[in-house]
Length: 268
Image (cartoon, rainbow, N blue to C red; front, side, top):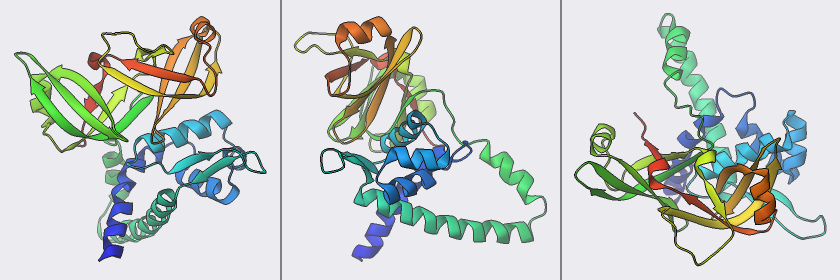
């Protein structure tokens, strides 16, 4: 009985890894190489990925998982590294087994259905793709309806939640109900970063964490903040703001997000 429950837990996260399909790199292979080498740098190099692309892939996977699949290790003789969590190893194993079964099913369908490939590729077009840098999967904990709009609060794990303001019509259209799963999508330029505490703001959402990376561009910089539980939030701010706020690895920071800037989505 315990083994069956464990297998179900492993498989429950698998659909959330569909974002890896259809891209240039196999994210599942990236996880396996991280597990084998203990280094995201080595894993990325072996796959021809940039360090930045590898971390973006890892952060996307962690954000869509109930538990972190990858974690940073600090200290030690080798100065730390990156490893899969126990949960991550179980997910990778389950996903590989599911892939083997999937291939057998597709072969069987191909034998009994004419032009299966054509229809299969058409169906794959319905997989969700979005330009939003921040994507989280959670469960709806409350819905408060007003005359026109509703506030929907999504539990994204580790004691953190996101509130979204959408129209009542959208609530009905998406079929939102307390307890169901939904995605929260937030574009990186909509995230405001602060390092100050103790002041009031109109932003409904405050996500506290630690800066793990800052990538400077020509005008703007990309700031990645790791939250409790391993999820991350990405913000695009000006290079001047990065300097004036003293943003760098290890600095405590808070991501402020207006509820009206949180887009909700559900699986069809």
